[in-house]
Amino acid sequence: MKRKPILAGNWKMFKTRGATKAFVHELAPRVQEAQCRILIAPPFTALAAAASSAQGSGIEIGAQNMHDGLEGAFTGEISAPMLLEAGASFVLLGHSERRHIFNETNEFVRRKILRALEVGLQPLLCIGETEQEREEGRTEAVLQSQLAACLEGISTEGLIVAYEPVWAIGTGKTATPRMAQQAHQFCRGWLQANWGSEIAEKIPILYGGSVNPETIVSLCGMPDIDGALVGGASLDVEKFAHMANLLN
Ligand code: PGA
Image (tube, rainbow, N blue to C red):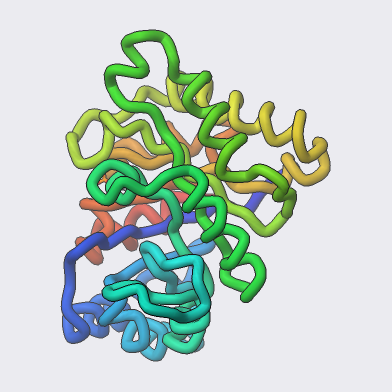
């Protein structure tokens, strides 16, 4: 089955509202012919501006995180209905920076996924091993435990998964296409075993970790790699447009 490729940009804590609008206006005409889904996750404060600038372009706007509650006394947090109101259609959940810097657990990520699905935001679940876990030969065990815990009791065609080895994020070290394919194949196998082949074949699994215009084609040429989640290189409109036009 051919899955439509996805190029997703995770802007992290970069770009103001003004810079976001300028980026989306420059990007839209450059990706009119692109064959992939194009997703951008700007900071919360730029979401509404991004969504209105992207209108009619096919570019999808989403958030980098959310809380699982609908509302409540959670200082500094943002809920799923707030994201929807701002124009988000998807949300990154469980990014390694959330897990490692902000101590988010698989159980918390699972509750967020449930809430996102309930309100109609597409969850993009990020998983991946640390350098030490890879060196100890525990990559598959880590992926298995993250998938099992984050997706316990869940089965849906509406999920996107991103495999992002922690040692490759923001480091300039990319996994080789072979290494990444092995991890993706393992994740697809887990989905097949737990959700059945029909659903597993439909779930896009993106690779993330220092992807750039030079590496994206060989990575996404692998059978189980359906696109990329890009941090650093997504901040540059020329590079991002170039990557979008390379994915088909
Ligand atoms: P990077 O970030 O492309 O800068 O490595 C990827 C990510 O954190 O999603």
